[in-house]
Length: 127
Image (cartoon, rainbow, N blue to C red; front, side):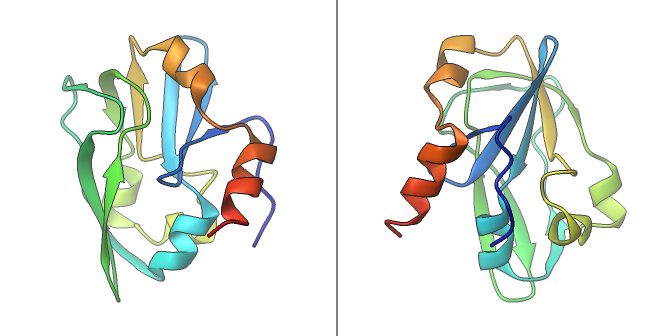
């Protein structure tokens, strides 16, 4: 498994969150993309939609499976990564460089409760 970036926070459903000012970028982890295999389609939440933490909000499809995406923190969808519509395989190439969507007005306390990199690595070792 490739390195797990230390500056991100992680959910037990294998999503990552990166803060940039007042925006929270959300993507899937290397563990998730590796489990899926070759990603062929990404479904996105609606821009403007208010999402709850742990809400199933969309799916990622690969050549071998479809997997739910669970929103890690409460917030409002600011935008989605349209680049993945035509090139979903970018997730396989570098899942940490290609977010799925961006949240605004997110819950900072929920962000702080997500796993840090070392806790996420410990969690992966239990799987």
